[in-house]
Amino acid sequence: METTPRQHRNRFNTLIDPAAVERVKQLVLCAGKIVITCHVSPDGDALGSSTALCSVLRSLGKDATVVTADCAPKALQFMPGVRDIVTATRQPDRAAELIAEADLVFCLDFNDLKRVDRLTPNFEQSRARRVVIDHHLAPVIDCDVLISRPEVSSTSALLYIFLWQAGWARKLGRASAACIYTGMMTDTGNFSYNSNDPDLYLIIHDLLRRGIDKDNLYKLVHNNATQGSIRINGYAQYRTQYLCGGRVALIMLSGEELREFEYSKGDTEGLVNVPLTIPEVQWSIYLREDAKDLVKVSMRSKGAFPVNLVCEEQFGGGGHVNAAGGEYHGTLPQAIDYLLQAIPGYENLLE
Ligand code: 5GP
Ligand code: MN
Picture 1 (spheres, rainbow, N blue to C red):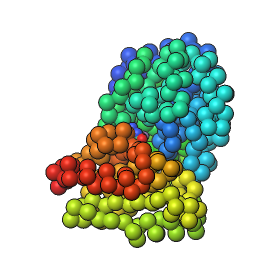
Picture 2: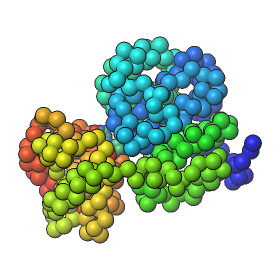
Picture 3: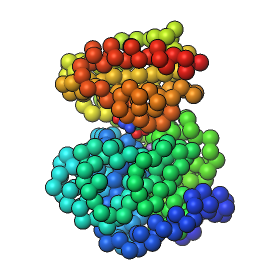
């Protein structure tokens, strides 16, 4: 059933170079086995775009599988198709086998093969054709077709437009539409940033017509706190340090604190955003001591302050201007010292 308003056709038809869309269609047509992958520690957008594409390819009769470095967070396990993902942490041999046998690989929501973590060598060695669909800046993945649109707020929205242009949007059922919506919602903070593009709402209109319950998707993603998660977030917020005249916030959780609060993966999702609700705060930093000698770094900013630059230059990471991450190899106190020495070098970029 055709449910899409006519405006879609006009607005979306040329967003992606039609020749690139045609090349991807040809590659899909010729491929026997297809693997779809996304970045390590997958978020709603990585999972939403990957599972939606997988479902569409399967409904086109293709042998497609999503293979990722590690598992989806608990809060996103409700997403249709997430439980079928082959993860290298749980099924290392199966993941390696699928990649080795693939004729075509889709790389979704990342711009550098390093981002697939332990699977990087597998994908580097693969002779499969490669298609990248992504919205991070400056992609450096060697590929046959590159669909890179950093101005689009989520890979899920970009994937929708790709599917539309390919004539495959009609294959989106309620489940895959829910995956795309979840990706769009999570990468825009529930449509609170990067979300003024009217096209987003044309896409949502179509996804609603395909039967998604957007109000319930919001609840599924966000209303899953536990007493423990509320406690650890409260503690971390209480202890947040404010620097540079209140323009920079620093949240820290040590390994010992994580154990004390019985932290489980995903418990502090969104915590790094909280200080930005203070009008003066432009740069929020979260350091979490995930393992001995490994500190996960997560940053958010407002306006032009480029946290991707800081994460690239200081923490071997990257991301977007306003949301980025990286790692520090050492203890939490060492990470803090290192960060405090680096901050003055970026103070001039604050407003
Ligand atoms: P989060 O802070 O939620 O982990 O990640 C925010 C953004 O930064 C995401 O777009 C993610 O892709 C990127 N990001 C997070 N961690 C890393 C990292 O270690 N390396 C790179 N290159 N990007 C990261
Ligand atoms: Mn994304």
